[in-house]
Structure formats: C-alpha cells, structure tokens
Image 1: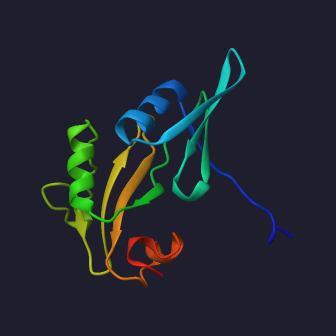
Image 2: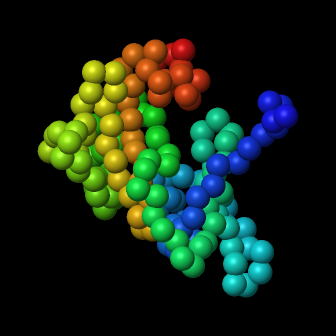
Length: 145
C-alpha cells in the first residue's frame, strides 16, 4: 500500500523557537519556521540529501529517551570537539564505556549521544565499515556503499 509513498519523520519539542536556535546555531542545520497561526508554528530541519524532519510543539512534551536522529560523520572526534565548543553536552552511558569526549568506540562504529533543549536524544556516528547498518541506512555513509 505505501511502497511508493513518501513519509515524513517528526518529533515533538516543548519550544519550537528554542529548538530552531539549537538546530541552526549549535548543529549548523538549515531550518524553516512555518507558522499556522500566531500561537502555533512547526519547524522543518533540512538535512543532507534533500530529506526534511518536522518538529512540532507539544505542551505535554515528553523527551524521547531513545535516539531520534543519527548524524553520520566522517571524523567523529572533530565533530564532537566542534559541538562541545558550541556548548553541546554529550551524554554518558555507563554500560557503554565512553572515552573522555563521550565517544563510545565500537568494533563497527563510534558513537556519541547528546540531547536537544527539549531533552530528545540524538547521536553522531562514524561507521567503520561499509557494511555497518548506519552506512547502509544513509546510502553507504561516508565510506561508500
């Protein structure tokens, strides 16, 4: 039924304007604030490759404690350093054994998690092999496909 239908990924925040500031200024993403009326606006994140993510306000927002967006990067150390210098704080999960930067170094990928101002979790990830599930999920990732 939906094999030829597009879909839009979306998630909620408690403050769309604060989210726009974070995603633009901290992460460097292009955004569009779309107003339905003076009391309600949604935010579009414009990602590489032409995809977009819809962020909408929700008064009783509950942060996603699972990872929503995985940003696949070529040099995770450089990206973590840049985000840290912009005030992004990385999450530490005791069970994963992160290094001093907050990066968990794994056999097939390195990852580091952070939250947006609404408490939603995201990550930066560097696949180490083209067969990594993250590489294939983004068309081969930075190492080809």
